[in-house]
Length: 291
Length: 225
Image (cartoon, rainbow over all chains, first blue to last red; front, side, top):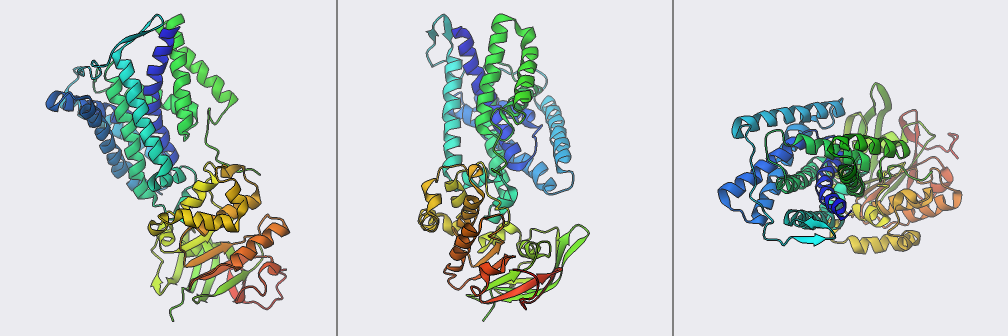
């Protein structure tokens, strides 16, 4: 059982990061970023380049992934958000544009890096391994959980206490209200997509410790991130973390007791049950006021 | 002296619908102007047109002598034009404290947000008692207090208030109007739209009548009570 717990905590950390990135963009700017997968793969390649060309220092490699994610966020802001903001059929256009970016990105990665799998040097091998009950907690898991906890805490404290953070949170609630208090949605978009990119970039480096990096490696995290964000309630950061835990626990239990082939089935059942009971997700943001 | 607000031949509407038909209005420094009119005659559209929250507008709007026809809503808020809208436009999932602080978002006001928040909580003690409560769970009157409080958080020069009494009991509506009328405008101006004449009669410098999208001098014979 402790093995299930360890797997759950590890997966929670990574799914939460991707889902936070997707959920924040949806809440703050109102579009579903289907290029989150290409951001993920780009950040993984960025961090891999840092680790092979510059240094294997853990902080520098993590920063390499995070900063590449931030750059991708700025790129999406420039190529998708700013040109399409306030245009008719905004939702469909942004979906199409981010999907197109996703295809372009994968092909660019194929061209630049080839289809070969890239492997990171272990970043957390200096951390001790230890036993929790009968389960062995590897240094990668410890490193993933610590890095996620530190970065998410820093970002959430920043969002909760700074002027720009208040602007971002206000935008997630009411675009008109935000404009009325002087918040510029177009410049705030850089902050929102930058933070989203940072979360996804960090997830890419951490998951890169377990899985190889290749041009298509962003698709699975994108799908898992979308599932978690939807389950948590699109737009709710707290919900994204809770849903990440639910999905991770569901996967870990299924792996343990039924085998990997059943993961998608149990996940589908979980999503169906939660959305039937709570259509706005586990912790969908309170969008309406009391009558 | 340059008026705070000068509107010349303003026409505005939504899609193919023309709501305002050639509005002319001048509001001087320190002046409180009331706009009386029944529902659906264009009071809200006029206030929203000033801050660029309508589909389209034509004519000229000068703020402190400068045209603001091309200024987006957020830029006007930063320049001291504060709209306290109908429906409040608050952030329902954020706390009262966050909602109030958002009113101090424009650069210079942010550093003074604590003092301004204390000032607002003095005016509306009920807000001060529950700063951490999520705004979506407040009653209509409390939300209106929060909306007006948010408007008071910045150093505004032009207050635009849209029907502060809407949906509120007479006691709360009167209390909120008393607060607005007691505001120290400090050389700024206040434009208040209201359909309840009793709430603003004799408490503003002059009243105008909005009828069918046109602004005319108030004769007191328009069926607005």
